[in-house]
Length: 162
Ligand code: HEM
Image 1: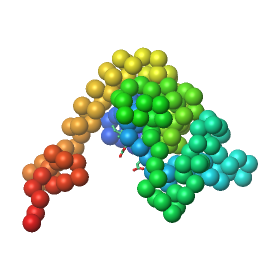
Image 2: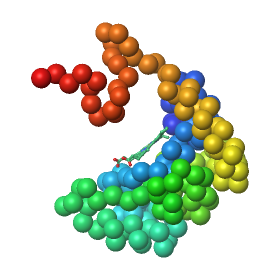
Image 3: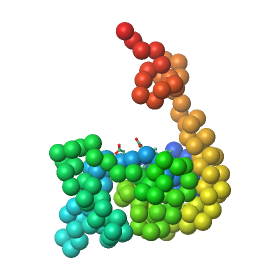
Image 4: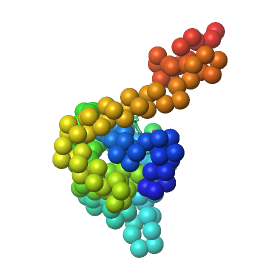
């Protein structure tokens, strides 16, 4: 977590802004390989990461059992309301239901936990902080002219070369 905090801070983002932005994980999904280390062979003493809710960990192990042969296997980032932009992601972290190591670590770290607790308790506080932070991110080092372009569709150049 301290590495993530410094990566964001080098770019001018505070801990609160980083936690708010990562709240984007309230939607979307992650491939099993991104969290496999947490659910298979975690350590010498524990098969799964002990910060994970054990029932959730078993569900993820079942879902990802063949992930090396089926690399497309994925899990929702927010297990309860995966398609809704809300503060459930933060409530999940409080219950050990953070999917990625970097998600769950925000609950362990003393710098980030107060913001997790704030956003879990107060959805408006999350929405306000997210709106401010994503607006700031959206103008961070925007490339234009000969250096690049803002894409209309994220997976395509605006003018497709033929
Ligand atoms: C704190 C640092 C962050 C880390 C380490 C991280 C890591 C990841 C990883 C590993 C995935 C899964 C990718 C995959 O399996 O295809 C993911 C998904 C996602 N991340 Fe992050 N992320 C971070 C911050 C952010 C931020 C700041 C945003 C946006 C403001 C964001 C938005 C998303 C979204 C929307 C998805 C789901 C993508 C989909 O469904 O296709 N993440 N993230």
